Length: 308
Image (spheres, rainbow, N blue to C red):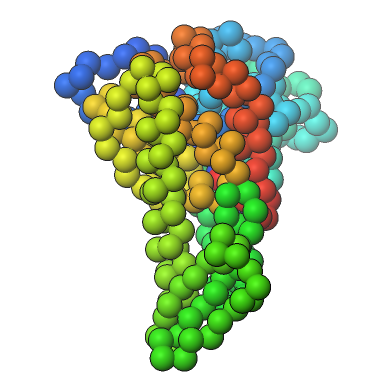
């Protein structure tokens, strides 16, 4: 059965394997990805291999549908999907704007539905992953990398000021330095050259800000991080290894500082709890009592377009 596939711009809502539930030994360089989808309330369940009951779900899962009522582990990835009854003659799968929807006729049992989901697991995960990667590409293409364009930066926008070597075009001299994204390119530079130069500037700003926020929150959590790397991942905001290596997606620089801080605290908390257990969330809450609201805002963040 060939299920329809729909692509929309839904920036970074997660798509990573379920994190380990126990703390690995220091000898293991285990990384822990940050996924941003909260578990949704489940309804009817059936004891089928791969199906996870709501009580056993971690607070963060790989892919989620906002109206999810069933959850399954597919290809090592947790998928929260919407299950609906319909007048179809067979089980149907749809990967769309909100994630996975599975529809089945009334006469098909839940056990058969879950078995069908497992049978189609490779296709489902591949399409969900393709969906997220396409979103990242769409986000980058949506920014007009030209002189005078507006670029999302720390939850607001800055104007792209393109200076040509030897020419010196100047944009908005009435603007303050914090309202401008300055780049210098060769005369007649292409859009790609302007984009690459702008991203170098954005990554430099991201690295400096992330380091400052890590230094601020690490003592509050009683942890020590050893190394920061910028990530270009298409499905996760950040990850942490038990050797103190933190990776943060440079595109966080487009978001408000409150959401950046949530990701920083999330990753630092993994240096104490390499899982998403209740103890992990208690650790996050020690320094960020409103983390749930920030987490929700991150998942729904428009990033200048529509929702990571």
